[in-house]
Image (cartoon, rainbow, N blue to C red; front, side, top):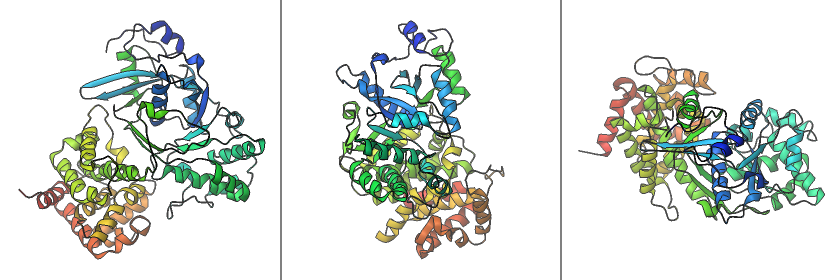
Length: 505
């Protein structure tokens, strides 16, 4: 890419002035003709690489007639206000750079036309936007912690301290879900159609989780309102996918040097993206099927496929990579033992646990994931993937173990994965370098992992993570042998033993 424009901050004026000179694909539509139909809460990198890019694609179709589906950004946190300040300086535009080893493409995403002012504690501008009848969808990327879930049940927790505080004055809500419930209540009594609540978070059953939070809070306020929401508001489940790392100085410098202007919050991602949605939008929706979004009656088979294969593979490679002090996911895929181990576990223990997925070959999907993980331009950090193993293991690793135990399939590779997590939580790489705490419950995990060196069952007794699986004799034996092998022989040899056993020469 050449340096075709002078280095200055990105703005709509610069875009118009320089549009014929730069190598960045710019919106082909007139942004002044757009009106908002979506409020999106949580304008992070993933939203701008995923949902915002799909909407941008759709509006850009000459015959789509989708100008009423532009996005209003929103948020309630201090970092949302900081993001708004950055994006306001560049007319709400985002530079999106797609990269892989042999490909680089840059474009400007113009589908967000404003960012609602962040004004705590009352959030009056957001309240007003939620009452706009033109807003038919309120979409969310909050991360899992934003849904106030009970760790043990995975359901909405009405005893969460933030929710208890919210209940003390529901007429002046301060949480996302309090604001949504209040807006739906006012819309109901004003005779306005409700908006659809669309979770775009990468969590299982995200629509059901969002529904649980909204209705759970509404029940504590007004049972009749909760019943009305249940009957009239759409909460479609969705499966979202696009590897989108954090933005740092290197990415901002790339935009400045290679594209010739400054973007305070560019987004870098892989070329691949996928969005599978249940078609449950009572108040209408954009025609996203025209730009590659797949609408299905039930998203759960696709969701399980992604959770087991993609997220599970991340969880399977990251702790071995960390113990060997590899920095990025593509480094792990280049490591001959880690990549071979990962392939064996997926083919022998993970994929056999997944029911058939419509029009999908699971082994082809795994080949696609391997190629995506091997993309060196994404530089997805191992530290990011290692984070919060206490919530990742029960979602991505323990369920296929439970099903394989039930159905008589091997669990040795998955037991080794969990043992590598335990060894990681002991706090040092194989070289002796100390790990920085990398889990919300690190102190407890670290103490338990050190004790597990002498008694592996101490680790498996964490029932909040392992449940009944941690007490199954077959798993206890396999996990104990795996942890002993890692400690005595090193993680590389432990993986190699498994590979040779499952893939004999």
